[in-house]
Amino acid sequence: MTHVNPHRRAAVSLALALSSTVLLAGCGVLPGGDDTRTVTVWLMRGSASPEFVERFTADFEKEHGDIDLDIRVQEWTGIGGNVKKALKGEDGDGPDVIEVGNTQVAQYVDEGGLYDLTLESARDLGMDDWLPGLAEPGRYRGAQYGIPWYAANRVVIYNKDLFARAGITRPPRTREEWITATEKLNSGGNQGIYLAGQDWYTLAGFIWDEGGDLAKETKESSGDWRGSLHTPAALRGMEFYQRLQALGDGPRDSDEEHPSQAKVFAAGDVAQLVAVPGVARAIEEKNPELKGKLGYFPVPGKKAGKPGAVFTGGSDLVVPERSDDHKGAVEVIEALAGKKWQTDLARTMNYVPNKAKLASAVADEKGVAAMAVGAANGRATPNSPRWAAVEADNPIKGYMTKVLMGGDPAAEAREASDRITGALNLGGL
Image 1 (cartoon, one colour):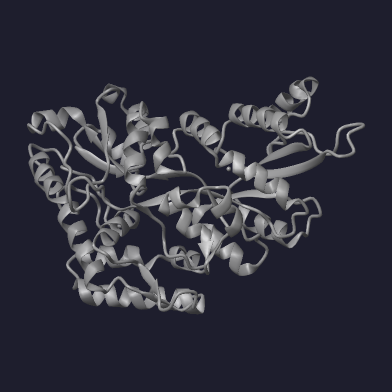
Image 2 (cartoon, rainbow, N blue to C red):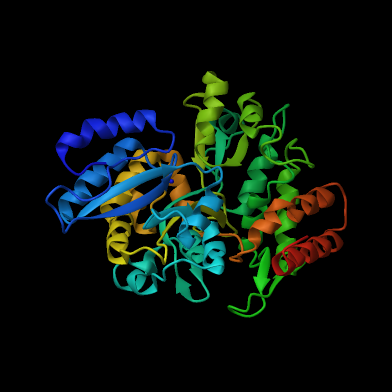
């Protein structure tokens, strides 16, 4: 991850209910309105509620009398191929604005077809205030192509009862406090934390905190990348991961979905979990007795007052070069990414807004508020158009398992770095 006139609202509601690819507005110009043009927007399913889209459309069209919005909801499955076709203009009825995953922008730029929004970002969209985990992957070779829309990131979900029994009266604020608290919690048949051995997004945050990275470009805009898991900073991040992971019974050879970490936590004997706040709902569904007993805090950093680095997921908004209405597309993005509709979207969908100064919009939602604090120190995966090749057969997961099972960290990291280098520069592992 609409109307023009009031008498069309019923038809739009019917379309929302019946269409698998939801068409939220009629297209074309109004009868007698020769100066009215249509701006087509692709949003992903689940990114915004139908009610949000209706509110936004009605308000936008009221403020922009010469534009009709044609907002179409797309499925995530197969979206990559559909976006590529749209950027090439192969379907003849393509979008003017597309929502894409924040880490996908570089890939689409590299393949050609995105409109450069650098000027608009600096002049109209307040780019200096954007969350770095959304803004950085939207920038490629010095130009801004992706405009941050919303963010989500991991926090620590904890069992308040287990914290109270261990005598822990407040969440830890630093990594060392976190280790100390987790050691206390890891007793009496309880797990201090459930951390799967291949939770590489969480590892990435620890590596970033140490000043390392998963891969580095050898020279700005060179396109030449090198895996960097073997650097001293990255190895320190893995060392901390080892310490934390050992304070629970998380499997060393699988990720957080195998088995489902929500199901494990729901058993009631796990004190902490690193996950997006939405996982709490799944936990409560599996064990209703935990309702009201779950708390949240940002992943602690090395020093008090600064949360740990976290991977920031979410979406950016892009404009195809082939769009014949760049001005209209930018006006839509300016509204969606602006304060009014960022606040509305954050409250409606429990997202983190695209600017840290808008975090107050979700202050009443404890899980989202903790997420917003962490998002201020958010990061994204290496901004290479070939990063998907790394994730497809992820050598970071294998590296983590080997180290947790007793392998030499430096040697295993060097091997994983070499595989990352091969994927980023040759397109294969």
